[in-house]
Image 1 (cartoon, rainbow, N blue to C red):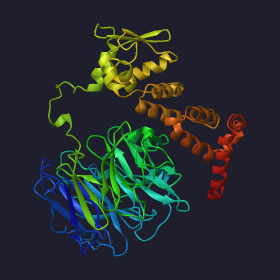
Image 2 (image 1 turned 120 degrees about the vertical axis):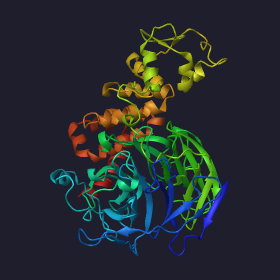
Image 3 (image 1 turned 180 degrees about the vertical axis):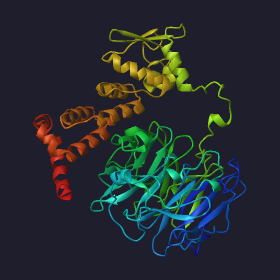
Image 4 (image 1 turned 90 degrees about the vertical axis):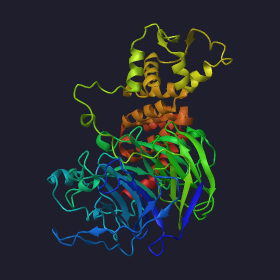
Amino acid sequence: MLCVLKGTLSPLGPPAGVVARPQPGAPNGADPQVLVMTNRGAFYPLLGACGHSGLRLGSALSLLETGEAPGNPLRPYQPLEDPTYCYPTWDSWSRSIFFRAGHAIFRLTSDNVVELVAGDPREEGEPEDEDEEAEAAEAGTGPANEDARFCFPFHLVSDGKGSIYCTSVVGNGDLDAVLRLQLPAVWRAPEGEPAAAAEGGGLQRVRLSTLHIEEGRIYGGLAYSHSDGCLVMANDTALFRLPLGAGGERGPAPVLLAGRPGEEGERDGRGDRARFKGPTSSAADGNGNILVTEDRGGRLVSNTSALRRVTPDGSVATLASGLAGRFDTEPLVLPNGYLAICAETSLLVLDLGLKPLPLLPPASAAGHATSAAPPRRTLHADMGALLDAQPDGTADLTLVVASRRFLAHRAILVARCDYFKQRLARGGFADGAAAELDLPDADPAAFELLLRFVYTGAVDIPPALAPSVAELADRLLLPELCADAQAVVLSGVSAATVVGSLLWAERLGGSFSGLVSSLKAWAVEHYEEVRGSGSLRRLMAESPELMEDMMAHALTKRPRAQ
């Protein structure tokens, strides 16, 4: 099904985003309220978005705002005339909708009150980290961040844990920063409270920090992956995972998820075998996938858009192509499974049977069970226990790695690892039906970690083993583990080790190309330290081309840093 709503929002502007929230004042189990936001700051309910009997727009919401001075009563909200409104996103932590107006970020509470979050709508500037200022201020005091500055914040996204992320133009307009806005504690909605009763506090201080500076523009949007707690960002030709540190703070450098930097195309496939052409927006669905829109005709053409799906393992599939319109704001999976996408003057709705993201976190066990109830069993824990129980007579395969023997279950290896799926297939390798398989040239310690990842989907990788794990995971066709290991390598890099890591990653090539780019960027950023370590002589001797490339980047960055 393809449904297009055109011209229905005039004169209050074309659609600039779609967002869903719990019905204000209704029980948490009620059907969500879906809102279409216009670029002039109006919100219209999208009626019928929870069923399959047709869609139509309701009357615009009546919005409120506080007066100029603290303590003033609420008054009707007057949208700003000049700034463009866009990028609405739902945040379950504060039960609010966050959106952009000009160079500022606002929120809409469940009581339909509009409040400034950070920035000045009409004055742009470069964002500055406010960690020290926030730590010096008393909790819950201070003004809102009207003194913070952004240059058109893009792609707002929530992690549901108290942070809002976005991008903002920095430098000379050719770089993008990924920013984190840590919300005030008093904005947190009490668990189990109706949305309308969850608001708190009025204007509060927001803590602003920079997570990453991208050497280029993040045209393709930003999404939060709830399956692994990381951000996914897209440039013109590739998607990258941006791991987050504890509490949503700055983590390791980005790792390639799908596509290949600098090489455009329209090819489906996994990891760096896929190709993208002009991503314009990204959003997550309820199954852990990232949905990406593309402008395949170039950024000045508006009639050749496409929709792609990227799974957590980096597999890319095209869901629709030849779509009319250009889609710059993040799509939304509606409660009925349709996908809503805003074009320049219309709202496009595709019936794809998708799973929407939950609007509220699951209720805690304390509210539904007694303290004596047993803990909820999880698949990854049970699978880990099965691996730890060996030998228990259930294993049907022995994997020989150097001098060590690992007992495993053939069906699990086939289901969870493409390498074993191919090697153990009937009619495949000559030893596919054997009771023992040799893995020559593999590090037993690295394989032990890889096997646990196959069974449980997660593993702690010691920095000393990260390179071996990354190589082995790449060889055994486990791109997720390879990406995790690369992130560990990058997080532990130093001026003394970056050249060795760079030469190693360049030698491997392929799925390590994203790591090469990140290591080069790190070396350029810390150029004086790297030069002082004496390791550049090794780089010059072993890879003159890489040395020349890094020097060129260093020279182009130096004037900007002065």
